Image 1: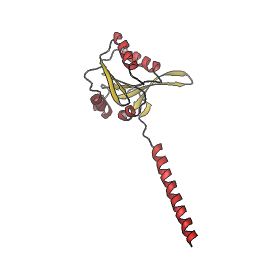
Image 2: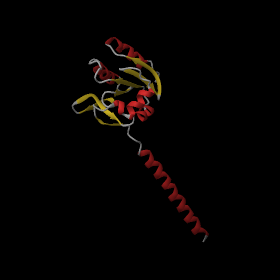
Image 3: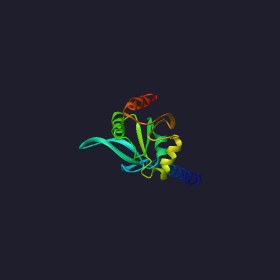
Image 4: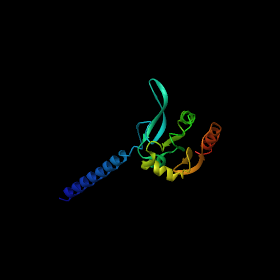
Length: 170
């Protein structure tokens, strides 16, 4: 009789332990995806250098949760705020070159306030987080902390933006 109770308790403990392990594993697998599909017209996107069978290039992926992405990112994050109606034609290729050059060491987020960005929760949150004063506005964050910002864009400012990126201690 004593043996039967001991076996029963052992089984209950085993089942309980397995249930706890299952819950822990399933909750870690349900981590929300901060980055979504390729959509270059979304108000908040990330530039990603991707390769496939035809080669490689920069794609724009919609960001589902910008705050989550910035908080989880181990690399520095360059957030570029711009008004799509007024951005310099040379600024877009420059940001794509940055993505190519720093593909493994920098996350680039693009916030277009002209594509519904002012009505986008993520865009509004980022504008407040980085205290954006004008467009274009380049802000650098590392490990969730704002590091520096740069207002305006012209060809001569490209070196300053690169220096700002390189100044972050990884």
